[in-house]
Length: 493
Image 1 (cartoon, rainbow, N blue to C red):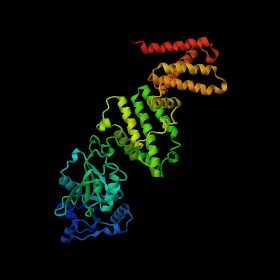
Image 2: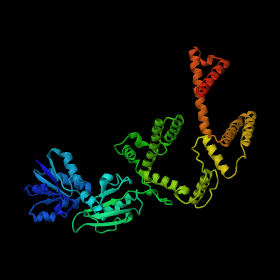
Image 3: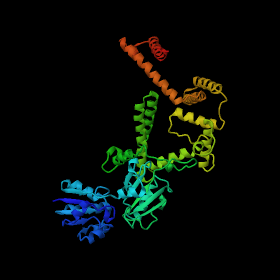
Image 4: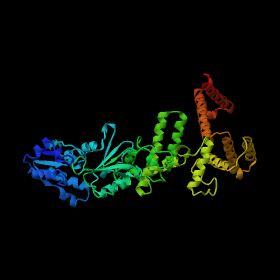
C-alpha cells in the first residue's frame, strides 16, 4: 500500500504547497514525525487529524534509534501520509530509511526546506559554493573551511555544545558565525552574529535552529593561529576514513595487527623510495611514493587516535603552527634577508620554545635512527654552528689523509674504530665541499651497479664467467663501461 511523504515546509503555514494540503485533507491516516513544529497548530485549525512519533524521542537512546523506529512505524501502516518538517529529502533520516526498504511504495510531495528560507534570510547564493552538514554527524565530517557552510539540526543547547567543540578543531574559537532560528517564519525568526565559542550560550537554540559558518580567511601578518589558514582544498579526510575502516572491527587483519614499532621499517623504506624517485626525476613515480609516505603518517595518526594520544588534526595543526611561528620574517615583522638570517632566527625561536634554555649539548638532539653518514653529517653541522669547525676545506682534506694512514697502520682489533674515523673525516670533507654524503654515496653505489652490470653483460656476450676472467680483462671491461657512460653524458655537447 502507498506511503505518501509530505513536506510541511520550514515553519510557516504559508509554506504549505497546494499538493501537500490536498494530501493532508484526503482523509487518509496522517503520521507526523513530530508535532513540535510551527505549522502543526494550523493543521489542527483545518480539522486535519494526525498522530505523531514524539513519544519515540522520549524513550530512544539515540537519534539513530528514533529514526529507525519512526521508519518502522510508517512502513507497518497500510495506507498512510507521513508528514515531515521542511523538504522530505533534506536532512530527513527516517525518509531515507523508508525509501531504502520500500521505494516502490513511496510518493514524495515536496515542500520548501529550511535552506530555501535561510538563503533568503542570509542573502546567500549557493551557486558561489556552499557546504551542508548535519550537526549530529560532525564527528564523521567537518566543514572543509574554504567554502561557506550551513550546519543544520542543532536541536538543543547540548547538541550545539558538542558541535562547537568539534567545529573548533577546524575554525578559530573567535571565528564569526551566524545563528539563525526559524528562518522565514513570521514572528519567530531570530538571527545573531556571534563568535563560535558562544554557540551554546543561547537558551532559544532548538530544533528550528541552524548555524551559518563563513569561510576561513587567510591569516593576517603576525597571526600564528593555524586554524585561520583555509585548510581543505586538498583534504586528507578520505585517506583518514579508509585507514579508520582498515583498522576497524571488520577491517584488514594485517592492518589491525600493526603498532608504531612494527611500522618503523616501512616509514624508512617509503622515505628512501621517495628520495630515489626524486633522483630519477620521475614526477609520476614521485607522486606515488609521496602517497606511500603520507600513508605512513596517516597510519601512525590512526594508531594514536585509537589510544587517545593525538590524531591527524593535531599533526597538521602542530606543524602548521610551527612553520608560521618559525617564519616571523614572513608572518611577522622580523627582518631576514639571507638564508643564514633565517637559520639564526629559527634557532633563536627554538630556544624560546624551550623556555629560553640552551640544550645541554649542541649535538644531543640528532636522531640515532638516521643512517650513519646522515647522522655524522647532522652532528658536524650542529657542532659547526657553535664554532667547532675547520676554517677552510684544507683542514678536513688533511684529516682524511691522516685517518687513512692510521687505518693502514692499525692492528686488527683497532681497525673498526679507525675505519669509522676515516668515514667520519670523509663526511666532514663532503660537508666542507657542500656535498650531501648520503646522496653522494647513493649515487656512487648506483654508478658502481651500472658499470658492474655492463661488465656482466659483456662477459656473457663473450661466453665467459666473471670468476674465470683475469683482473686485467675485468679492468678493461670496467673502463669500457666508464667510457660509455662519459660518452652518453657528454657526447651530444
